Amino acid sequence: MSVIKIFGAFFILLGGFLVYAILGTFFNVISGKKIQAKIVAVEKVESKRFTYLYYPIFEFSYKNCIVRQVNRSQSIDLKEIGTKTDIYYIENHQISRGFTIVEIIFSVVGICFIFFGMVTLFKQR
Image 1: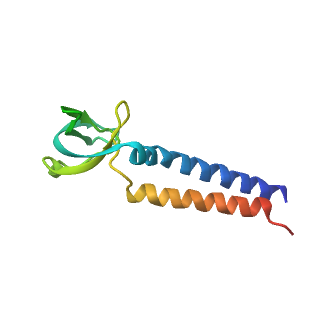
Image 2 (image 1 turned 120 degrees about the horizontal axis):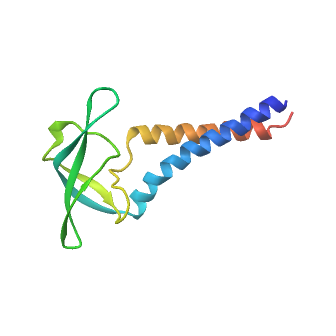
């Protein structure tokens, strides 16, 4: 019986970690200002897999100033240079491009882990 409770606690901790990792993006989307930015260039960085990562350099207007900032949270294709996209911007924080399908899937999996952990910890025999 104690092994089941250990698995329940493990599921709750794992689910909590997954949900906590998503809260950073959620914070930026809720409290950030939605701005339309243009990808003007890329920053080319060599990765560990003997390939290159291309980080977008966004240019947008914020408080009557033109801001150029690199977003190192995800790599893009070179075809995306010159396109406009919506970003969520907070001064002194990282740029967020909103929720991606991967983040949504991990948040659902995290919530399921928390639910199954609660069921295994608190089920009555």
